[in-house]
Length: 111
Length: 114
Image (cartoon, rainbow over all chains, first blue to last red; front, top):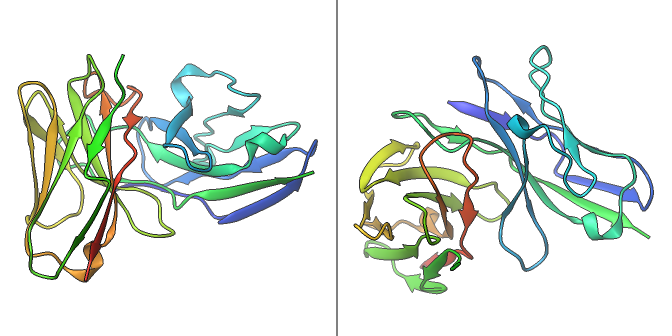
């Protein structure tokens, strides 16, 4: 199975502090990884994907094959970043591949 | 551009019954994936349909089945409901079945099995 794990269920930081949400994956090959976010009372939505190497809302995530990690980082957290964040493998493109999302990390940014 | 819609919003069933959940994909999308999200858990992949054929399946028993129609809308059917099937069922659509394609999620259907 293509599994990702998020070790922190809850992360609480103060506004302006750096934030890092951890994600590790446990499968070999070329993983395709995404970060999805769910704000209160909104749908799950894509935050960023590793292949784009982009920065969205100040967040970045680098794929580290040596550490098998895809941590999400932001140098200065804002209150509006408070949400549920999920690390996820890409949509299935093959046969009988089992995609296991992380359990999610709830980020609370305090004023 | 119309987003992903799901129906019904909420559903209550009893053990042993059967249920059908529906999903309309976003305009222009030909791929639909279904997920089960139990309370406090991340979404778990059930299966994906691409151009009306199943294109991958997660670790769910055969009583979870699906369909995709020519207009790319989709159904998730669950037979012989069990209490553990109580969850939020999410549908996501994308263009193409490739792993790098962004998925757009619907609001979900909350299923309660009594």
